[in-house]
Amino acid sequence: MRADLLADPVDGLDEALAAVAAFDGVLAGGLLRPQAAHVAGLSALADAVAGSPLAARVAEAAAKSAAGAAGEEHFLALAAARIALLGSVHDALTVRLDEATGRVRADAPVLAPAEPHAANLLAAARAWLSDLARAGWQGIDHDLVSGAAQVVSAMLPDLGLRRLAVLLDGFAAELGASCPGAALERIPLRRWADLWSRAMLLTQPGAAGFPASGTATGRLLPLGVELNEHATAVHAQVHAVFEPADGSGARLVRAGAAVPKPDTVVGAGVWQLLRPHLSLLGAVSEGRAMELTGMPITAEGDLVWNDGHARLGEPAEPFATARVALPVASAAATAPLDRHPVRIAEPVFLEGYTISTGEALTFTIAGFPIRVDTSRVPEAGPLTPEAVAASSACIGLVRWDDGEFTVQPLAVETMVKKKVTAIHAGAWAGGTADKQGVKAEKAATEAVAVLRERAGRLLRK
Amino acid sequence: MPAWETTSAARVLEPARPRKLAKVPFVELADGRVQGVVSSGSDIARVYVSSVAAGSFAVSCSTNNNRPCGGGGHCKHISGMIQEAVLQYGQERVARYLRLEVPSGSSVMQELYKVRTPASDRAAAASVFSRFLRHLAYLELSAGTAPLPEMQWFPPVRAVA
Ligand SMILES: [Zn+2]
Image (cartoon, rainbow over all chains, first blue to last red; front, side, top):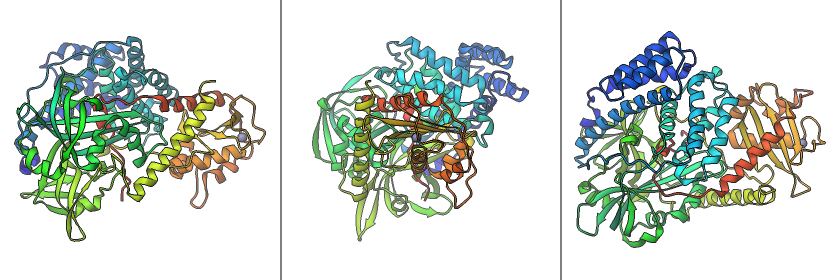
């Protein structure tokens, strides 16, 4: 990987992010009665998309908002403008990253709206998000935030609404813990504006669809697992190289499973919630490939996993996959509405770096340092920041946030008792004999058992 | 190091810390209260719904059938619930949520005892119990394997070494 390219400035990036930041400041104070400084933030956003098809609608929305007279459709237009700007940032960063990795990427898939349904729930969510925008982060209180609970509860059972439901659930929990907004000492402006605009977009009927799908038949070689979670949801995503049986070129793909959970099921205990739905997690822990037959796949390279289309294959060591198969695998493009820098998670194989552990852990590759983000390594696995800091090779995800590319380690090779040993962040995904892992799993099993017993006595009365 | 205000993946909340749920199956910081459900020691079909309001420290404790607890003010259910809240969220976060000053060496409950005759907050119980039922309903939700790109905003939180 050419780390020098990742350190180079990207043209136009600062300007786009300045407009985003100006609008993010507006949401802090709210759109009910915007102050002069906020009016400037609205104009900055409108100006930034003046050359796009959104121009007229965003200009109108900015003007109405500046006058404190905006309605839901205006908030939606502002959210769309912000998403479009960050989409362009995503595209510029992806081009740069592909230059650095030498990876070939497919053309962007066309937008594929989902079958619209549950319009009333989407409308309820949009009304809540609009109230939030009016109040601003400094104006939130418990009454306002708790309004999300009913909408989320109604949406969660419907898998077609899961994306929005899980997003709103995590967002509302953060807002609830931050009430009253007037007393906030610091506000995660970029993050909350991200979550708000993303949710606003997903309230549009059909926006949560996935681009045209096909099926995948061939060999799946896992590289590693990332784990994402908030208090009441957990998501595991496997990154892998897929070698089609028809001999066409190898591709980078993902497969994941997600499930809502009680907030008291935590740590390594979350794997047991996911394991029954994704046999791939077992293959990852065993270091095996999987053979796929007719597995559904989206144009973004996401396998929509169904155990019936997969069986356990031959042993396949992820570091061998990373050294041999990864360099020749092509990548899929992100769907139009999903383009955002947070989506950048590009699998790479790194070795021959020098490690520095000063203020931040960095790998220096051919003279250029890249920060290693060990905060994304889950505690629900054997990989530790210490092992990363003593590593000689690394399978990781290149990400971008707040102006810099970073590497999230998925696995490292390091010396253990004078032997090169691979340590994987997702090693416990399929099960573990590790003492700490077993303890955490047992605690989670007990927690679920207690709650089930309570639910059995209290829930259906 | 990334700046809080311009980071998409800023970590706003720490995950709950694991604890045993047998005595207090549910506790949360929500709706301006530390609130939870405490299993009765004598009747397996009964739970106590207990809460302490932020700022006013008004307390509420009654059974799930809406009978007031006979334990008075800071009953054992309130103290049990606060103890588990501290286990789950840490003392600092519970104290901050309650807007309660807790000097070093003291505890949340010790400071609450100093509020001699806490006002009661009768309205709380019904809403707390329905929050508990909502919490239990998470056990019934199915898993999905469709892509969930929104979870990219929710990376794990690793305790800083
Ligand atoms: Zn009581």
